[in-house]
Image 1 (cartoon, rainbow, N blue to C red):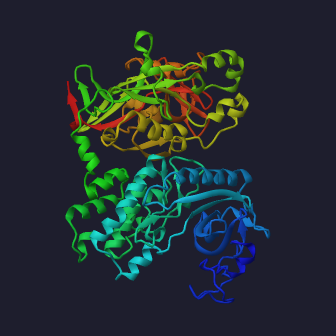
Image 2: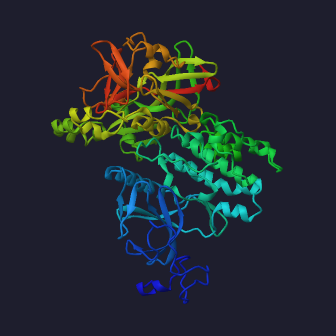
Image 3: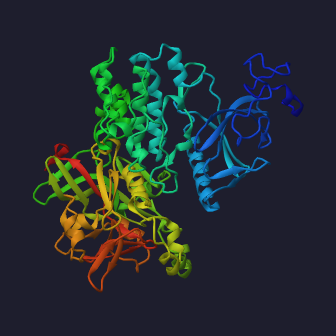
Amino acid sequence: MEISEIKKMCLSCMHMTKEEDFCPVCGKPKKGVKTFGRALEPGTILNGKFLIGNILGMGSFGITYIGFDMLLEYRVAIKEFFPDEMVERKEDGSLIVAGDTTEEEFQAELKAFLRESRMLAQFAKYPGIVSIKELFYANNTGYMVMEYLEGGTLRRYIDNNGGHLSVEQTLSLMQPVIVSMEEIHKAGLIHRDISPENIMLDSDGSIKVIDFGATKKLNNRTAQVYFGKFGYAPLEQMVGEGQGPWTDVYGICATMYCMITGDIPTDAFRRSMNEPLTPITDYNIQIDQRIADAIMKGMNMQCADRQQDMGQLRRSLYGFSQEEMNKKNEPVYFPTINTQMLYDKKNRRVWFGHYPMNEVSGSRLTTDIIYATYDLVDSTMIKGAKFKRFNVASALMSTAYRNVNRAKIKEDSRKYRYFEYTEIPWVIRQQKGNTMILQSEYVLDYQLFDDKDYMDMTEREIGKIRTGIVWESSGIREWLNRDFFQEAFSKEEQERIIVKEIRTPISTFTDKTTYDRVFLPSVEEMINGFDERTGAVRANNSLKLFEEQAPCYFSQFADAKKINESLPMGYGLRTRGTVNEYNGTFTYGESCDGQSIQAGMLKNWRLDVPMGIRPVILVDVTDICEV
């Protein structure tokens, strides 16, 4: 397309016509209409090839325009990162920060938008997700170029088809969306804005989720609070706490509720004030009880009582896939596909999940292991066994340590050490009814509480960080519930781990609630057990020896990651605060100090120091096989 042809283009629908004023295709003004004063002018050209037209939609995080790729000559939708409370637009179209927002805050949000857009681009192959064509930076902000969908929103489709859809059509339309969102969640992202307004129909009648502007990387503390759309957002999203895949489960089920009944569900705020949600079976519709129960369960007010991820929702609505049915008939190979929890009652140990623990060396280190093809996380399968290779360059170390040991690190970085995945032994910390609380007997890994950048800070710089570093937003919580969870447990094993409501003290009187599959223990839990009896600890904040507990062992893999021998031998707790070893007290707070157990004593865990990780999980006793 030539620049001279732009005047022939209708900026409302991006069709080229000879008429000058109104487009014969869409009936709207060809010059476009600027419906929001802070938006880009229709006719703007971005990145040298994208022609901007009318606004398609807006939200708190951005503006979506109809666009036209002048090189490839096809219509697109272009999302501009525009957090309206943080920015203003200059006359030249560029953005500047406004109000109380700092440049650093805006850049942090922009980086998150660009990073998560890149992650979403890899999901273009899935049918239920709008595909991303390009990502670029201009006007001091980011732009995401997406496919343009012809059919309008699901909300409009429902209205144009009698106000509601049949159960069969709803299930058929939503299945690819549920499958695609399952893959999105595996990458550590949640959408947080699923509703009929954010689902579009293509020309072939298929539907796709759009508007990932509210997308949040799980536990990313820089993400803005986003309340979602009333009727489709669960309570934990509205209050900004405990969000996860179950948050999108609520959005999907609320959307299906609307599709089938034609009504917007009672919003979570009103439901929290005891205003009821009408059961879907109370409507005059034909619906199988199993389907109705699955949708209503997904809209439960309590996170832990919903399906915990899209896989569980998919199975409750559609049953097992053929691939999953085939897996049930496959032989079990030890140790990677065995999903039984083995219980040694005499020694009170449970074996469940697999993690690289024992080093492979000597005659056991064969060429098959050394020259195998390793994946992105340096793991491989060989004859039913799983192995991980480790390079010293991957170890956590400060710049100071790296500078002092540069020659040794350079030499060791040419070598790999190899570890075999073996069953994880868990100590039974508590059993209440059918629920059993387990803590790994070994320190399995070595991790920081939060960002790696803290390792390169001076002691003075670390000392200035006094607020905001808490369990809810920490890097270690994200690592445990995403990276560790996916590496240590197969899909079948993941479904056997119970989501627990976790209350973590952030001051003497205040707790923060999260919902986690894997977590670290708190001071209170290590002293009083997991019965949430917090009063005794807070009334008497005295240090206590932990020597009566079983000794703590380091796996060979964790020991290899502890490259700096001066680092502490111990394991971290999720609670933050200050430990005073001189007068025998500790306090809670959002300070840079954390808590850990070292040699049976409660001690500080600084942000710049890695610590051993002994995770805790909850399982159902009925899943355990006694040996």
